[in-house]
Amino acid sequence: MSSPSSRPTDRRRSVVAPPVRTNPAPATRLKRPSGTDPDGTRVIEFRGVDLRYPSGDVGLDQATFAVDRGDFVFLVGATGSGKSTVMRLLIRELEPGAGTIRVAGRDLSEIQRRRVAQYRRNVGVVFQDFKLLPNRTVYDNVAYALQVTGGTRKEIRAKVPDILRLTGLATKLHNFPDQLSGGEQQRVSIARAFVNHPPLLLADEPTGNLDPETSIDIMRLLYRINRTGTTVLVASHDKVLVDKMRRRVIELSRGRIIRDEAAGLYARDETTREFAQRMRSPSERPQGI
Amino acid sequence: MRLGFFVREAMRSMRRNAAPSFAALATVLVTLLVLGVFIPIVQATQGAANGVRKRVMVDVFMQTTATGAEVARVRRELLGVPHVSRVVLETKQQAYAQQSKADPAAYALLSTNPLPDTFHVYPDNPSNVLAIRGGLILRSPGGGTHMLDPAIASVSNHANDTRKILEVTKLVTITAAGLTVLLAFASILLIGNTIRLSLYARRREVEVMKLVGATDWFIRWPFVIEGTIVGAAGAVLAIALLGLTKVALLDPLINDWALIAAPRTISFAALTGVLVFAGVGVSALGTGLSLRRFLRV
Image: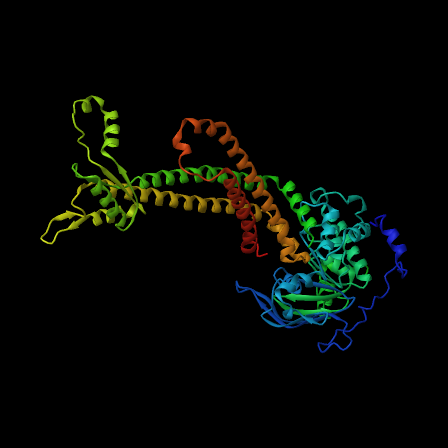
């Protein structure tokens, strides 16, 4: 599972990573009260956000939550529950009907239309369908993100191979997207999203098109990125991964936030009554008791 | 402004999207070829029409008994009539010489010269011919008409012919102009449509660029440059083909056919300029506008 290229990166890290993930704080962190942000550590702040699509469907309904710097948050919920809406609001593809959205303290509605592009350079986005530029090599795909921010050819030549090594694509520099597997394409997507080292990384169903083994690789990559201090927000359908990673979970249903748990599971943890019922049902009766 | 980067991007996408780019180039080539053939033809038609109009004039026939002094007097008077630009005298001797050439047998039978002195009165503008006639044939107080000068025998009665000529040439001119406008319009639509189709096929690419944080102009420049190159290439090819046709087919004919050479048509250099301007302009502008309207970039 671990790719050979991961080892050089481990060595390069200034802080030695512990072999077993110790408590990275979320498990004991309490849910943040929605008040002001005195320390200025909030990367995302949604307050009473409403959004209704022109077709009449509810995108979001009074959504209120906050994400701190360095957090790793899962957005879970059924299709149409509002996960993608949150993502699209965060990249300013949509604007809320009501409420405020703050990213790094900045109210998104104050950003003028012509400055949206500049804002987006500070938010890395990864999609389920990878969204790579089809007629460019892996190198050029990632380089494009640097060219957009005005990077010189020298900078690009230095940074791109670096990030591709980080994401395990060192040998695929000159391949085109249609020559890569799904997992590799998603790695390119992540490399492109992260090459400018944005403070916030959004991933909308990043493992939606990938097999379980590859999905683990991708989540590992996102986890590694989170450990560099990047705030990561992942919308996911993948129950297994969410349960395994035990991170903060925000559950949405029909646009409303119905659960916001630190170290949560994909589904709400069962009540004691449900537990008893489960114990009593014949197929579940544990052996030897 | 990273122009070099944008040009490289444009070349890259032309290479990778060869089919739509070629379609656009072919469209530009065909429309410019048609325009390049049409413009000189329209000009020749107009030139011919104008040529016909120029020949429209009023013939003033003197009395056969008119003296030299009367002829001189009438000439002065004619020059004074409004809208007259020039007056040319064809003496009876000149008329006789010309007519007898046409029909020597008949004129050999004549003993005297029956032809009168004729003034050919040219108007400043062909449409004023009838006004000039009105200035020569005046109304008499007791009804009827009389000539401006008693030495004038008659004024040519080409009124109907004149009117017909003027109407027809006007119609020809208007039709030619109308066709040109229609053709230009159709060309713009055709080129624009081809460009729009090729851009539409690449809308996902543009969407990704927007998500990564590229500004509108950062996305637009490579496409517009690509459109310019395609337009220029199409124009150059069209001009090359037209030039070849001209050298191979038309130039040898000009010596034989005065009709082609006679009307003043646009010089080849000027036509080149017009076609390049049209090809590049429509292509580049069309790309920019399509991007704005359909891809919202």
